[in-house]
Structure formats: C-alpha cells, structure tokens
Picture 1 (cartoon, protein in one colour):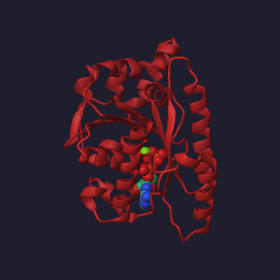
Picture 2 (spheres, rainbow, N blue to C red):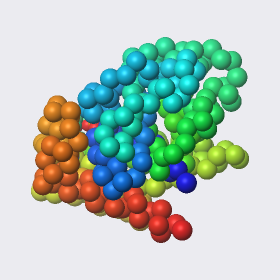
Picture 3 (tube, rainbow, N blue to C red):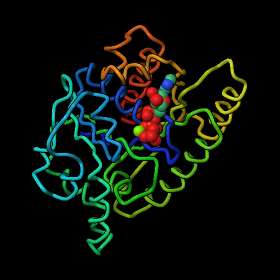
Picture 4 (cartoon, rainbow, N blue to C red):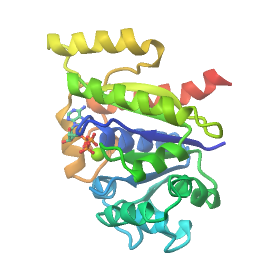
Length: 254
Ligand SMILES: Nc1ncnc2c1ncn2[C@@H]1O[C@H](COP(=O)(O)OP(=O)(O)OP(=O)(O)O)[C@@H](O)[C@H]1O
Ligand SMILES: [Mg+2]
C-alpha cells in the first residue's frame, strides 16, 4: 500500500523541504518507489533536485493534463511533480470552484489515477491555504519538522490543532507520524530546552534530531541530495536514521 505523507509546519524555514528531499532520496536508495509533490509555489523541490518539467502541481490540481504527465523522474526510484508560481493562480481557481468540499479534495480524487508508488511525500508552504488543505486531505500521515525555536513550536502546535479538525472528518484519517527536531545544536541550552519540551509534549512521536549541518544547505546549491553531496556528513547520518524510523513506523503498526 502507498504511504501518503505530508510534511508541514506553519512556520517558515523549519526544514520542511530539506526533510522532504533527503527523506525521499533515502527511501529511494532503499529501493522504495517514491513520488514527491511540491505543494509550495516557491518550487524549491524541483530546484533542489535540478528538475525542470513543463507541467507542475498547478496543472495537476487544475486538471490541465493527466496526472501521469505531471510526473518527471529525478533520481533512480524517485519521481517528482514540481511546484511553481502558477500554484498561486491555481489557489484562486480552486476558491472559485464554489463547492469547497470538492475544492479541498481535488488532489485526493486526481491522485486516484496514480499507482505504483510505495511513498508519496508532499512538501507544503508554511501557511494555511486551499492548496495545503488539499495536501492534508490527501495524506494519511503527517511529519512536522520543528526547528529549535519557540515560534516553530507554536507552528507545530497549530499543525496539530489543524490535524484535530482534519483528522476527525468522518471519511478521512490523518495521523501524526513524527515530529522531527531540525537545525539542532546540542551545545546551545535553548536547543536542549526546546528538545526536552518537544519530548514531553510529543513523547514517542519524536524522531532523532537533525543536527545543524552546513552540508545540508550546501547540498541544495549543488542540486544534490545529502547522500550524493556529503555521504559521511552529520546531515546524511541524521537523515538516514530518520529514513529508518519512518520505515519502522509502518512495521510497528502491522
Ligand atoms: N539541519 C540543517 N542544518 C543546516 N541548515 C539547514 C538544516 N535544515 C535546513 N537548513 C537550511 O535552513 C533553511 C530553511 O530550510 P528549508 O528550506 O528546508 O525550510 P522550509 O521549512 O522548507 O522553508 P519554507 O517554509 O520557506 O518552505 C535553508 O537554507 C536550508 O538549507
Ligand atoms: Mg520549503
């Protein structure tokens, strides 16, 4: 069965895109078949992976072409649907559909035609929008990256509150799979304190922390995943551990 995961925090810059790229690439390296969908008009996913394509998530949502034609290969076992600025126009058009029960579920219905993936992972913008809502109403699992600051924690609480509303819709199950502490620097007391707070609040749902590692930022500018750019870095080590954990969550639930 396909695991459909959305990666979200309403605070910007918490490591969502970094997590999507390196989680997806790590899963693909384990021979899982992975599709990433960029639900953010910034289009960072395609830029990071060095992928261009004539059709993007906005074409997918607006039904301009069949879903399969929006998909482009990025690496072995790793495909992507890129995001671009047209997503903002798509948002407007979705609003004008009139019936928001339909507008919120366009992705859910459209993606029924796409088969053959073990994981579909969505990267979201740091805001609540109809596009984000489409991701939440398609996904079954939520991963929330939290950088080590108070506002990111607030952003993660807002996501959990949203999850309570979305997760309780009668015909949709959405569960918090993991909270991922990011940009962690153990020598900073603030980071240790935020980490302890997260552990108290989310308990077993906390993953290993992703340490602050400049190689992760550099990898993006080289259009490489962390495993390609710096396979022996802390970034590669931490994301590989996260990959193991994500795989294990499903095994534990069986
Ligand atoms: N563990 C890390 N160590 C060092 N730098 C990191 C780490 N994680 C992310 N970064 C850097 O922090 C910045 C924000 O990361 P990223 O783009 O992944 O966040 P985001 O949540 O997707 O942002 P946005 O909300 O704008 O979409 C980027 O410059 C990225 O390279
Ligand atoms: Mg991002």
